[in-house]
Length: 236
Ligand code: GLP
Image (spheres, rainbow, N blue to C red):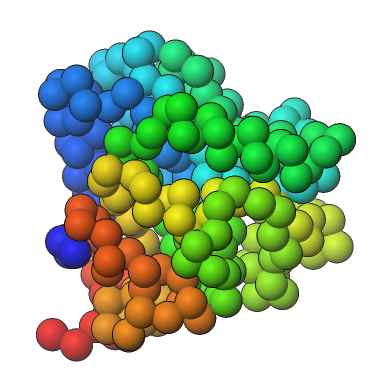
């Protein structure tokens, strides 16, 4: 893993932009994997303002809440439309449909979409509990796209976006860990002291399903971009 410590999220976003730009210029960005949450917002701001052209790039998002339609303000489809896609259209943008009648079929179809559009570069954030996508602690490293239960810690963490904690969906569709690892390249971002423990565990713990992000150590091309706050607990 390549680790880069930056001053703040804007510096992190600039590095992310550079990596994406280089891939595009090499014509090596047929498909990009995208994440939601507060972490990638600074990157999406820079992408929106950039002159990069994604009209030949497909995007696939990591996850979506079960029960929220794409026009619900807290759905990840809505997040992506407003933070990126409206200003920067892609050739095609896939986000799982959280209100599909048959959720298992939706998951199988989504996995097939990824098989047909292998991800060249996956943007990731990390949960305070070490989750990636919505693969919570204990998720199998062999997992593929499926419906998952969110743990109370994640529901609590994400309740900041909802009027009340009771409105936070308890389930989501998430790309699996095996799915995420198929990406040619992974860039994971983390900012703030509330991510410091997860970053320490990811980098310093043994690989364990109890901390899903630890599996990234097995991937051959991972760049970790963290700010000074998220790096505070690391052994140097
Ligand atoms: C969310 C998402 C993840 C994200 C993580 C961190 O629940 N499912 O993809 O990386 O949790 O979110 P944030 O960037 O808001 O801290």
